[in-house]
Length: 391
Ligand SMILES: Cc1cc2nc3c(=O)[nH]c(=O)nc-3n(C[C@H](O)[C@H](O)[C@H](O)COP(=O)(O)OP(=O)(O)OC[C@H]3O[C@@H](n4cnc5c(N)ncnc54)[C@H](O)[C@@H]3O)c2cc1C
Image (cartoon, rainbow, N blue to C red):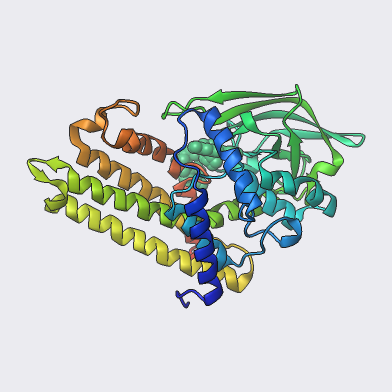
Protein backbone atom coordinates (compact mmCIF):
# COMPACT_ATOMS: atom_id res chain seq x y z
CA UNK A 1 0.00 0.00 0.00
CA UNK A 2 1.13 3.55 -0.80
CA UNK A 3 1.41 5.44 2.49
CA UNK A 4 1.79 8.93 0.98
CA UNK A 5 -1.26 11.20 0.78
CA UNK A 6 -2.71 12.34 -2.55
CA UNK A 7 -3.06 16.12 -3.17
CA UNK A 8 -6.80 16.02 -2.27
CA UNK A 9 -6.08 14.07 0.93
CA UNK A 10 -3.41 16.63 1.85
CA UNK A 11 -5.96 19.37 1.18
CA UNK A 12 -8.44 17.71 3.57
CA UNK A 13 -5.71 17.30 6.22
CA UNK A 14 -4.84 21.01 5.97
CA UNK A 15 -8.52 22.02 6.07
CA UNK A 16 -9.21 19.92 9.19
CA UNK A 17 -5.99 21.08 10.86
CA UNK A 18 -6.71 24.77 10.41
CA UNK A 19 -10.39 24.34 11.33
CA UNK A 20 -9.34 22.62 14.56
CA UNK A 21 -6.80 25.36 15.32
CA UNK A 22 -9.60 27.94 15.08
CA UNK A 23 -12.41 25.96 16.70
CA UNK A 24 -10.84 23.74 19.38
CA UNK A 25 -13.17 24.21 22.37
CA UNK A 26 -10.40 24.00 25.01
CA UNK A 27 -10.17 21.62 27.97
CA UNK A 28 -13.17 19.56 29.02
CA UNK A 29 -14.92 20.07 32.36
CA UNK A 30 -14.55 17.39 35.08
CA UNK A 31 -18.11 16.29 35.88
CA UNK A 32 -19.78 13.80 33.53
CA UNK A 33 -23.02 15.83 33.09
CA UNK A 34 -20.97 18.87 32.12
CA UNK A 35 -18.74 16.79 29.85
CA UNK A 36 -21.77 15.51 27.93
CA UNK A 37 -23.22 19.04 27.53
CA UNK A 38 -19.78 20.29 26.41
CA UNK A 39 -19.42 17.45 23.90
CA UNK A 40 -22.96 17.99 22.55
CA UNK A 41 -22.09 21.58 21.75
CA UNK A 42 -18.78 20.48 20.24
CA UNK A 43 -20.52 17.88 18.04
CA UNK A 44 -23.02 20.50 16.85
CA UNK A 45 -20.07 22.59 15.64
CA UNK A 46 -18.46 19.57 13.99
CA UNK A 47 -21.72 18.86 12.19
CA UNK A 48 -22.07 22.44 11.00
CA UNK A 49 -18.60 22.14 9.49
CA UNK A 50 -19.56 18.82 7.86
CA UNK A 51 -17.19 16.78 10.02
CA UNK A 52 -19.56 14.88 12.36
CA UNK A 53 -20.42 12.11 9.91
CA UNK A 54 -17.44 12.47 7.65
CA UNK A 55 -17.76 8.88 6.36
CA UNK A 56 -21.53 8.99 5.83
CA UNK A 57 -23.03 9.51 2.36
CA UNK A 58 -23.66 13.15 1.44
CA UNK A 59 -27.41 12.52 1.01
CA UNK A 60 -27.62 11.71 4.73
CA UNK A 61 -25.68 14.75 5.94
CA UNK A 62 -22.21 13.23 5.72
CA UNK A 63 -19.26 14.02 3.51
CA UNK A 64 -18.85 10.70 1.71
CA UNK A 65 -15.17 10.53 2.75
CA UNK A 66 -13.05 7.61 1.56
CA UNK A 67 -11.43 5.32 4.10
CA UNK A 68 -8.12 7.16 3.76
CA UNK A 69 -9.87 10.50 4.28
CA UNK A 70 -11.57 9.12 7.41
CA UNK A 71 -8.18 8.02 8.67
CA UNK A 72 -6.73 11.48 7.94
CA UNK A 73 -9.62 13.13 9.82
CA UNK A 74 -9.32 10.81 12.83
CA UNK A 75 -5.56 11.42 12.98
CA UNK A 76 -6.01 15.20 12.90
CA UNK A 77 -8.66 15.08 15.65
CA UNK A 78 -6.36 13.03 17.87
CA UNK A 79 -3.31 15.13 16.95
CA UNK A 80 -5.15 18.28 18.09
CA UNK A 81 -6.36 16.42 21.21
CA UNK A 82 -9.87 17.46 20.25
CA UNK A 83 -12.67 16.17 22.50
CA UNK A 84 -14.86 13.27 21.41
CA UNK A 85 -18.27 14.09 20.05
CA UNK A 86 -21.13 13.40 22.53
CA UNK A 87 -22.97 10.85 20.43
CA UNK A 88 -20.06 8.52 19.96
CA UNK A 89 -22.13 5.31 19.73
CA UNK A 90 -24.69 6.87 17.38
CA UNK A 91 -21.97 8.14 15.05
CA UNK A 92 -19.74 5.06 15.09
CA UNK A 93 -22.40 2.33 15.19
CA UNK A 94 -26.05 3.47 15.08
CA UNK A 95 -25.76 5.62 11.97
CA UNK A 96 -23.67 3.14 9.93
CA UNK A 97 -26.10 0.33 10.85
CA UNK A 98 -29.16 2.35 9.81
CA UNK A 99 -27.38 3.34 6.59
CA UNK A 100 -26.50 -0.32 5.87
CA UNK A 101 -29.68 -2.10 7.00
CA UNK A 102 -32.36 0.54 7.63
CA UNK A 103 -35.36 1.46 5.49
CA UNK A 104 -35.48 4.84 3.74
CA UNK A 105 -37.99 6.07 6.40
CA UNK A 106 -35.56 5.06 9.16
CA UNK A 107 -32.72 6.90 7.44
CA UNK A 108 -34.82 10.06 7.14
CA UNK A 109 -35.99 9.82 10.76
CA UNK A 110 -32.82 8.90 12.66
CA UNK A 111 -29.68 10.04 10.88
CA UNK A 112 -29.79 13.84 11.20
CA UNK A 113 -30.45 13.93 15.00
CA UNK A 114 -27.51 11.52 15.43
CA UNK A 115 -25.23 13.95 13.58
CA UNK A 116 -26.35 17.00 15.55
CA UNK A 117 -26.26 15.11 18.92
CA UNK A 118 -29.87 16.14 19.45
CA UNK A 119 -30.60 12.45 20.14
CA UNK A 120 -27.93 10.40 21.91
CA UNK A 121 -27.76 6.65 21.29
CA UNK A 122 -26.71 3.74 23.46
CA UNK A 123 -25.96 0.08 22.76
CA UNK A 124 -28.11 -2.50 24.60
CA UNK A 125 -26.31 -5.71 23.79
CA UNK A 126 -24.69 -7.08 26.99
CA UNK A 127 -26.72 -8.75 29.72
CA UNK A 128 -25.73 -10.01 33.19
CA UNK A 129 -25.17 -13.50 31.77
CA UNK A 130 -24.42 -12.65 28.14
CA UNK A 131 -21.40 -10.58 27.27
CA UNK A 132 -18.85 -12.35 25.09
CA UNK A 133 -21.44 -14.97 24.17
CA UNK A 134 -23.89 -12.35 22.94
CA UNK A 135 -26.09 -14.83 21.09
CA UNK A 136 -27.12 -16.40 24.42
CA UNK A 137 -28.97 -13.24 25.48
CA UNK A 138 -32.34 -13.65 27.18
CA UNK A 139 -34.18 -10.30 26.81
CA UNK A 140 -37.43 -11.25 25.08
CA UNK A 141 -39.61 -9.41 22.58
CA UNK A 142 -43.15 -10.67 21.93
CA UNK A 143 -45.38 -9.37 19.13
CA UNK A 144 -48.58 -7.60 20.17
CA UNK A 145 -50.44 -6.16 17.17
CA UNK A 146 -48.17 -3.59 15.53
CA UNK A 147 -45.85 -3.45 18.49
CA UNK A 148 -43.22 -5.57 20.22
CA UNK A 149 -43.32 -5.92 23.99
CA UNK A 150 -39.84 -6.23 25.50
CA UNK A 151 -38.85 -7.58 28.92
CA UNK A 152 -35.34 -8.21 30.22
CA UNK A 153 -32.18 -6.70 31.66
CA UNK A 154 -29.16 -5.11 30.00
CA UNK A 155 -25.93 -4.07 31.65
CA UNK A 156 -22.83 -1.91 31.04
CA UNK A 157 -24.95 0.33 28.79
CA UNK A 158 -22.69 3.33 28.14
CA UNK A 159 -24.40 6.75 28.20
CA UNK A 160 -27.88 5.19 28.63
CA UNK A 161 -28.72 7.92 31.14
CA UNK A 162 -28.39 10.53 28.35
CA UNK A 163 -29.88 8.47 25.52
CA UNK A 164 -33.04 8.83 23.51
CA UNK A 165 -32.50 5.61 21.50
CA UNK A 166 -31.11 2.21 22.38
CA UNK A 167 -29.76 -0.27 19.80
CA UNK A 168 -31.37 -3.25 21.45
CA UNK A 169 -30.90 -6.90 20.51
CA UNK A 170 -33.67 -9.16 21.86
CA UNK A 171 -34.83 -12.75 21.35
CA UNK A 172 -37.96 -12.91 19.19
CA UNK A 173 -37.99 -16.66 18.53
CA UNK A 174 -37.45 -18.96 21.52
CA UNK A 175 -37.32 -22.11 19.39
CA UNK A 176 -34.82 -21.05 16.69
CA UNK A 177 -31.07 -21.85 17.08
CA UNK A 178 -29.56 -19.15 19.34
CA UNK A 179 -27.96 -17.00 16.59
CA UNK A 180 -31.13 -17.08 14.48
CA UNK A 181 -33.86 -16.08 16.94
CA UNK A 182 -32.62 -12.50 17.50
CA UNK A 183 -33.95 -9.16 16.26
CA UNK A 184 -32.36 -5.70 16.27
CA UNK A 185 -34.62 -2.90 17.54
CA UNK A 186 -34.42 0.82 18.09
CA UNK A 187 -35.98 1.26 21.52
CA UNK A 188 -37.22 4.63 22.76
CA UNK A 189 -35.58 5.15 26.17
CA UNK A 190 -38.14 7.76 27.18
CA UNK A 191 -40.78 5.40 28.58
CA UNK A 192 -41.52 4.32 32.16
CA UNK A 193 -41.00 0.66 31.25
CA UNK A 194 -37.26 1.38 30.86
CA UNK A 195 -35.41 2.12 34.10
CA UNK A 196 -31.78 3.25 33.96
CA UNK A 197 -29.46 2.83 36.98
CA UNK A 198 -25.93 4.22 36.69
CA UNK A 199 -23.03 1.97 37.79
CA UNK A 200 -19.95 3.58 39.27
CA UNK A 201 -16.63 2.59 37.68
CA UNK A 202 -13.18 2.30 39.24
CA UNK A 203 -12.52 5.91 38.09
CA UNK A 204 -15.43 7.11 40.25
CA UNK A 205 -17.52 8.01 37.17
CA UNK A 206 -20.90 6.49 36.26
CA UNK A 207 -20.31 6.23 32.51
CA UNK A 208 -22.34 3.04 32.08
CA UNK A 209 -25.62 1.68 33.48
CA UNK A 210 -27.97 -1.17 34.17
CA UNK A 211 -31.23 -1.19 32.16
CA UNK A 212 -34.33 -2.80 33.61
CA UNK A 213 -36.92 -3.32 30.89
CA UNK A 214 -40.44 -4.32 31.93
CA UNK A 215 -42.87 -4.61 29.03
CA UNK A 216 -41.40 -1.74 27.04
CA UNK A 217 -43.17 -1.03 23.75
CA UNK A 218 -41.40 -0.84 20.40
CA UNK A 219 -43.37 -0.17 17.20
CA UNK A 220 -42.92 -2.63 14.33
CA UNK A 221 -41.27 0.07 12.16
CA UNK A 222 -38.36 0.25 14.65
CA UNK A 223 -37.04 -3.18 13.67
CA UNK A 224 -33.75 -2.82 11.76
CA UNK A 225 -32.79 -5.39 9.11
CA UNK A 226 -35.87 -7.63 9.50
CA UNK A 227 -37.19 -9.92 12.24
CA UNK A 228 -34.76 -12.78 12.99
CA UNK A 229 -31.75 -11.00 11.43
CA UNK A 230 -30.52 -9.41 14.67
CA UNK A 231 -27.26 -11.36 14.78
CA UNK A 232 -26.16 -10.22 11.33
CA UNK A 233 -27.08 -6.57 12.10
CA UNK A 234 -25.32 -6.74 15.49
CA UNK A 235 -22.13 -8.01 13.81
CA UNK A 236 -22.19 -4.99 11.45
CA UNK A 237 -22.41 -2.78 14.57
CA UNK A 238 -19.38 -4.44 16.18
CA UNK A 239 -17.27 -4.41 12.99
CA UNK A 240 -17.98 -0.69 12.58
CA UNK A 241 -17.05 -0.13 16.24
CA UNK A 242 -13.67 -1.80 15.83
CA UNK A 243 -12.88 -0.44 12.35
CA UNK A 244 -13.78 3.13 13.38
CA UNK A 245 -11.38 2.97 16.28
CA UNK A 246 -8.13 2.33 14.44
CA UNK A 247 -6.69 5.63 13.19
CA UNK A 248 -7.87 7.89 15.99
CA UNK A 249 -6.48 5.29 18.38
CA UNK A 250 -3.07 5.36 16.72
CA UNK A 251 -2.77 9.12 17.00
CA UNK A 252 -4.03 8.99 20.59
CA UNK A 253 -1.35 6.39 21.44
CA UNK A 254 1.33 8.58 19.83
CA UNK A 255 0.15 11.61 21.84
CA UNK A 256 0.26 9.54 25.04
CA UNK A 257 3.76 8.26 24.18
CA UNK A 258 5.00 11.82 23.59
CA UNK A 259 3.58 12.89 26.96
CA UNK A 260 5.19 9.85 28.57
CA UNK A 261 8.60 10.84 27.10
CA UNK A 262 8.11 14.34 28.55
CA UNK A 263 7.29 12.81 31.93
CA UNK A 264 10.47 10.67 31.72
CA UNK A 265 12.54 13.76 30.88
CA UNK A 266 11.33 15.71 33.90
CA UNK A 267 11.01 13.01 36.58
CA UNK A 268 13.85 11.71 38.70
CA UNK A 269 14.03 8.04 39.58
CA UNK A 270 16.88 6.89 41.89
CA UNK A 271 18.55 10.33 41.47
CA UNK A 272 18.85 10.11 37.66
CA UNK A 273 16.20 11.34 35.23
CA UNK A 274 13.99 8.43 34.12
CA UNK A 275 14.82 9.33 30.51
CA UNK A 276 18.52 8.58 31.25
CA UNK A 277 17.85 5.29 33.00
CA UNK A 278 18.38 2.29 30.70
CA UNK A 279 15.55 0.34 32.36
CA UNK A 280 12.97 3.03 31.49
CA UNK A 281 14.58 3.75 28.13
CA UNK A 282 14.12 0.13 27.08
CA UNK A 283 10.49 0.08 28.18
CA UNK A 284 9.82 3.32 26.30
CA UNK A 285 11.53 1.99 23.17
CA UNK A 286 9.50 -1.23 23.34
CA UNK A 287 6.25 0.74 23.55
CA UNK A 288 7.32 2.89 20.61
CA UNK A 289 8.00 -0.25 18.53
CA UNK A 290 4.60 -1.69 19.43
CA UNK A 291 2.87 1.59 18.50
CA UNK A 292 4.56 1.49 15.09
CA UNK A 293 3.45 -2.14 14.63
CA UNK A 294 -0.09 -1.09 15.46
CA UNK A 295 0.07 1.72 12.89
CA UNK A 296 1.30 -0.58 10.13
CA UNK A 297 -1.31 -3.23 10.99
CA UNK A 298 -4.01 -0.55 10.76
CA UNK A 299 -2.84 0.23 7.22
CA UNK A 300 -2.95 -3.49 6.46
CA UNK A 301 -6.57 -3.63 7.74
CA UNK A 302 -7.42 -0.51 5.72
CA UNK A 303 -6.04 -2.08 2.53
CA UNK A 304 -8.17 -5.19 3.13
CA UNK A 305 -11.28 -3.08 3.77
CA UNK A 306 -10.65 -1.12 0.55
CA UNK A 307 -10.48 -4.43 -1.36
CA UNK A 308 -13.64 -5.95 0.15
CA UNK A 309 -15.74 -2.83 0.83
CA UNK A 310 -16.60 -3.76 4.45
CA UNK A 311 -14.52 -3.77 7.63
CA UNK A 312 -13.20 -7.27 8.28
CA UNK A 313 -11.92 -9.21 11.28
CA UNK A 314 -8.55 -7.39 11.05
CA UNK A 315 -10.14 -4.54 13.08
CA UNK A 316 -9.93 -6.89 16.07
CA UNK A 317 -6.14 -6.78 15.94
CA UNK A 318 -6.04 -2.97 16.25
CA UNK A 319 -8.46 -3.03 19.19
CA UNK A 320 -6.34 -5.66 20.97
CA UNK A 321 -3.07 -3.77 20.37
CA UNK A 322 -4.62 -0.46 21.42
CA UNK A 323 -5.90 -1.93 24.71
CA UNK A 324 -2.51 -3.50 25.52
CA UNK A 325 -0.59 -0.34 24.65
CA UNK A 326 -2.89 2.00 26.56
CA UNK A 327 -2.56 -0.17 29.65
CA UNK A 328 1.22 -0.50 29.30
CA UNK A 329 1.76 3.24 28.69
CA UNK A 330 -0.26 4.32 31.74
CA UNK A 331 1.40 1.62 33.86
CA UNK A 332 4.87 2.83 32.88
CA UNK A 333 3.82 6.42 33.65
CA UNK A 334 2.90 5.42 37.20
CA UNK A 335 6.17 3.50 37.59
CA UNK A 336 8.07 6.61 36.54
CA UNK A 337 6.06 8.80 38.93
CA UNK A 338 7.01 6.42 41.73
CA UNK A 339 5.64 7.54 45.11
CA UNK A 340 3.59 10.35 43.52
CA UNK A 341 1.58 7.76 41.63
CA UNK A 342 -0.53 7.04 44.67
CA UNK A 343 -1.84 10.61 44.78
CA UNK A 344 -5.39 10.70 43.49
CA UNK A 345 -6.78 12.43 40.45
CA UNK A 346 -7.99 15.53 42.21
CA UNK A 347 -4.90 16.04 44.37
CA UNK A 348 -3.34 19.39 43.60
CA UNK A 349 0.20 18.09 43.65
CA UNK A 350 -0.44 14.93 41.63
CA UNK A 351 1.88 15.10 38.61
CA UNK A 352 0.14 16.50 35.49
CA UNK A 353 -3.11 16.98 37.43
CA UNK A 354 -3.66 13.27 37.91
CA UNK A 355 -3.86 12.61 34.14
CA UNK A 356 -1.91 9.34 34.48
CA UNK A 357 -3.76 8.15 37.57
CA UNK A 358 -7.08 8.59 35.79
CA UNK A 359 -5.71 7.06 32.57
CA UNK A 360 -4.33 4.03 34.41
CA UNK A 361 -7.68 3.31 36.08
CA UNK A 362 -9.78 3.94 32.93
CA UNK A 363 -7.49 1.80 30.75
CA UNK A 364 -8.37 -1.31 32.82
CA UNK A 365 -11.67 -1.38 30.90
CA UNK A 366 -9.97 -1.20 27.49
CA UNK A 367 -9.38 -4.95 27.32
CA UNK A 368 -13.07 -5.62 28.15
CA UNK A 369 -15.17 -2.94 26.38
CA UNK A 370 -16.03 -3.54 22.72
CA UNK A 371 -15.05 -7.22 23.02
CA UNK A 372 -12.52 -8.71 25.45
CA UNK A 373 -8.95 -9.31 24.34
CA UNK A 374 -9.47 -13.09 24.69
CA UNK A 375 -12.39 -12.96 22.26
CA UNK A 376 -10.42 -10.78 19.84
CA UNK A 377 -7.58 -13.30 19.93
CA UNK A 378 -10.06 -16.06 19.06
CA UNK A 379 -11.37 -14.01 16.11
CA UNK A 380 -7.86 -13.35 14.82
CA UNK A 381 -6.85 -17.00 15.25
CA UNK A 382 -9.88 -18.34 13.42
CA UNK A 383 -10.77 -15.66 10.89
CA UNK A 384 -7.48 -13.95 10.06
CA UNK A 385 -4.96 -16.77 10.55
CA UNK A 386 -7.39 -19.58 9.57
CA UNK A 387 -6.54 -21.74 12.61
CA UNK A 388 -8.99 -24.52 13.58
CA UNK A 389 -12.12 -23.43 15.45
CA UNK A 390 -12.28 -24.01 19.20
CA UNK A 391 -15.83 -25.37 18.92
C1 LIG B 1 -16.28 0.56 29.93
C2 LIG B 1 -17.25 -0.44 29.34
C3 LIG B 1 -18.27 0.01 28.52
C4 LIG B 1 -19.17 -0.92 27.98
N1 LIG B 1 -20.21 -0.43 27.21
C5 LIG B 1 -21.14 -1.31 26.74
C6 LIG B 1 -22.28 -0.82 26.02
O1 LIG B 1 -22.45 0.38 25.81
N2 LIG B 1 -23.19 -1.72 25.58
C7 LIG B 1 -23.05 -3.07 25.79
O2 LIG B 1 -23.90 -3.82 25.33
N3 LIG B 1 -21.98 -3.57 26.47
C8 LIG B 1 -21.04 -2.71 26.95
N4 LIG B 1 -19.96 -3.18 27.66
C9 LIG B 1 -19.90 -4.62 27.96
C10 LIG B 1 -18.82 -5.39 27.21
O3 LIG B 1 -19.14 -5.51 25.86
C11 LIG B 1 -18.72 -6.75 27.92
O4 LIG B 1 -18.24 -6.49 29.23
C12 LIG B 1 -17.79 -7.68 27.21
O5 LIG B 1 -18.34 -8.08 25.98
C13 LIG B 1 -17.48 -8.94 28.07
O6 LIG B 1 -18.64 -9.53 28.52
P1 LIG B 1 -18.82 -9.91 30.07
O7 LIG B 1 -18.49 -8.70 30.87
O8 LIG B 1 -20.17 -10.50 30.23
O9 LIG B 1 -17.70 -11.00 30.37
P2 LIG B 1 -17.76 -12.56 30.02
O10 LIG B 1 -18.22 -12.74 28.61
O11 LIG B 1 -18.52 -13.26 31.08
O12 LIG B 1 -16.24 -12.93 30.10
C14 LIG B 1 -15.56 -13.18 31.35
C15 LIG B 1 -14.13 -13.59 31.04
O13 LIG B 1 -14.11 -14.83 30.30
C16 LIG B 1 -13.39 -14.66 29.07
N5 LIG B 1 -14.05 -15.43 28.01
C17 LIG B 1 -15.39 -15.50 27.76
N6 LIG B 1 -15.65 -16.27 26.68
C18 LIG B 1 -14.43 -16.70 26.22
C19 LIG B 1 -14.02 -17.52 25.13
N7 LIG B 1 -14.91 -18.06 24.28
N8 LIG B 1 -12.69 -17.74 24.96
C20 LIG B 1 -11.78 -17.19 25.79
N9 LIG B 1 -12.11 -16.42 26.87
C21 LIG B 1 -13.42 -16.16 27.06
C22 LIG B 1 -13.46 -13.16 28.78
O14 LIG B 1 -12.37 -12.75 27.97
C23 LIG B 1 -13.39 -12.56 30.18
O15 LIG B 1 -12.05 -12.50 30.61
C24 LIG B 1 -19.04 -2.30 28.23
C25 LIG B 1 -17.97 -2.75 29.03
C26 LIG B 1 -17.10 -1.84 29.59
C27 LIG B 1 -15.99 -2.36 30.46
